[in-house]
Length: 146
Image (cartoon, rainbow, N blue to C red):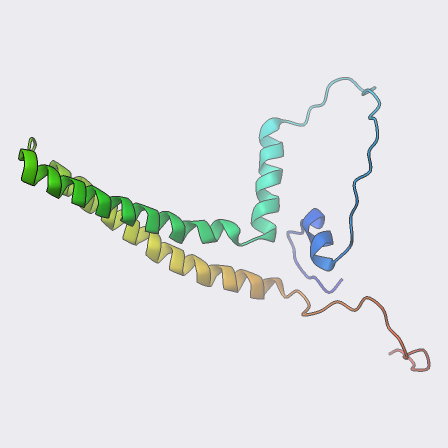
């Protein structure tokens, strides 16, 4: 009850609380009510909600994508410079524009990733989850609870 989240994903909250889990193997009986109407798109939306509601991991992919794009642009610039020295330029300005666009988008995603780190921290604070969970109380039997 101390978790005041509005968009609860109970399946992920059980692991966060610390409940142990174990697989239980069973054979499922055939369905009696015909065919399921639960759509694939709805199932994907449910999975995405689980990922987004319980983790900031997707936000951590944004700066990684930015660094990757920036690295690709640097490699592209080096390849274009070597190609220019060895063979000349087949299309004037094309390689420079592509490399600079990759670099700018890489930097844009890098800055967006920095902002997403702040958003992730805000997300963790807004959830207001308790700092700790008491599994058992010992020695408080004589105290009256308010």
